[in-house]
Length: 294
Image (cartoon, rainbow, N blue to C red; front, side, top):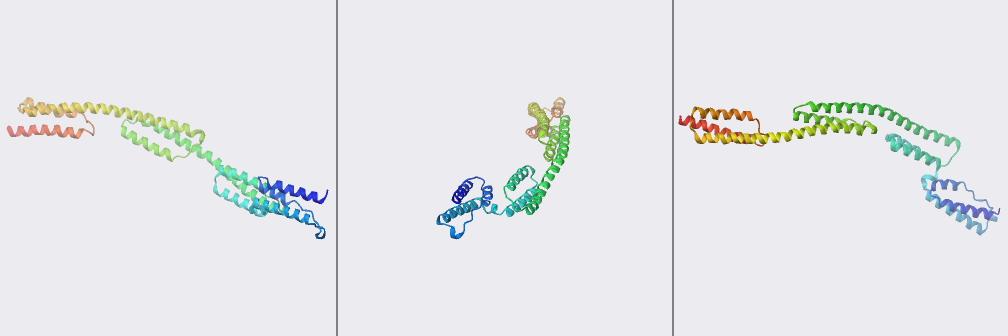
């Protein structure tokens, strides 16, 4: 084969490499291409032009590959440092993918010489091994952690069921909120169990909320009835005050109103004090008048 044919082929190969996406790998291949030696006295102007074209393509590929890929030892050293950074972060999910990519990058980083390549590889492999050992240890411990968290959440579910037995709604509500705060502090029990445990716990809370809502609905109705009953007692007290005959029967009747007031029970925070002040004021006025007129 003529030397010019070889040179044309080398130029064609260089152009092909320049068009490849993996510039780093292409550059490593280009470094192994050897331009035929020609004695200076035998080199023609055409030879010089071909050599200049080849060198220009090589420089373009070198620039495309980037300086980080030019020096194989430098590149491998950087890959080792990147592996150490991944190791230090303890992000095992993301780190595993990054380690895989570093290994692929290592494969395309090229060769120096067997002794140095082995030395660098042993260092790189040691970091990778430590990473995967830590990963395995982490997930082994994670299983124990998940088991402990699952047990803790099952205990909270059992305690949430006990809330149903607390008659005092306010006390039950406080206990339910305390259990919710404890739940927040417990870590994950694992993807397989977390949602199911949460649904169980949530069901107990919803059961309590339903009981609480029913209780308050009932109390509203009860308070409404008590308000009406106390308004009726106030109306009767007003009649006695207006009449003010101060007979024994009348005095006994107004005293009986006080007893009935207590029997009716609390009419709720919204109305109780106002109703009591009105009622008590009327009764006190009656007895003040009685002392004045008798």
